[in-house]
Length: 393
Image 1 (cartoon, rainbow, N blue to C red):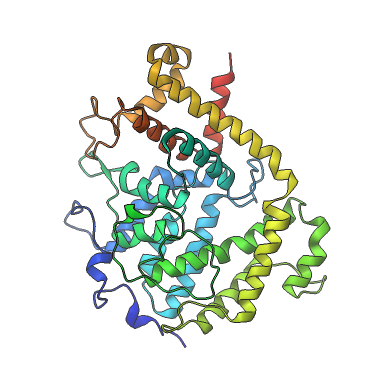
Image 2: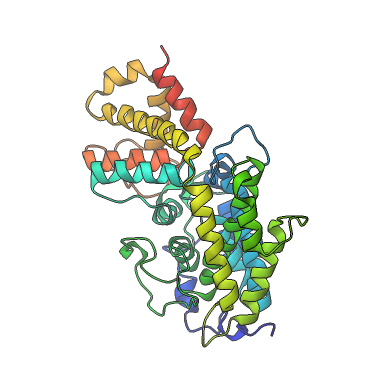
């Protein structure tokens, strides 16, 4: 039944509404804006440099020369499309799902989940904190990503609570066949680990599930394109219940899962699949892990990524104690980092920076945290280019 969630959508009649649209401060106004709260969030996200950089970040396969391999940007667009279909059918707020979906992976590091694990290891060793892209994404939109206003001032995005919650709450697999929003209005900085809390809105729950639907079939499609699944296609055909003469089509997989979710979800039980569809998703996920994500051919690239990210981190950290020497040795790299850091540090700041100071660069841990934020925002190619500049004589 269509619109069965309409009375629980994020709108003014929802008891959570004032919390959902809460911002740190008032948005500046031009006096002629016709957008809703979530439309303003959406446009702020897509106009940011961090959003644009996702088109050059790895999703699963590091393949910069193949235009047909899914990037982080394409994945985000797929999640937006899927979540919009679900939210529209159920009667939820499609503007909110769009804003969450388009920003949900904005905190991903270069080189996908391999890069995330490497940065997390560095972060744990250096500052005692785990790095995970969902929290990093929430902190990026809250503190790091800046936009120029109509007076040429750089300001924080200042997104609504509902969107920021959707970003940090999209983490974790769907291990139980039911997902409902939490009731508690929490400080999002209380999150200590992925999947600690459920999303605050039904729209956040939709994006969390759409994220899983989006990557399962698309990762298979890429793996087939790259020849990784040549030896395992018969098993895949059996899971998909297809004849070998039929095409393994990602759009069919998506459509079937979306239809099943919409038909079986209700307010009492939450967002859920039929038992058959949920079992199918788990089999597909198990297949992906076994033959794609843990494939031996991904290991050499992971070792390469570790060399790149550790070399960049160690070089920038040396700047903390050896400023003049390191700046003379790597002037271009240090100047670029310093230009970025000046937007957030406690020393002289550009007069058009209206964002808060978040780094005391005289504190070593805060300096190290700044480096991790900086590296996490890099594209794959920018990280490689930075590494090459470091090792080049």
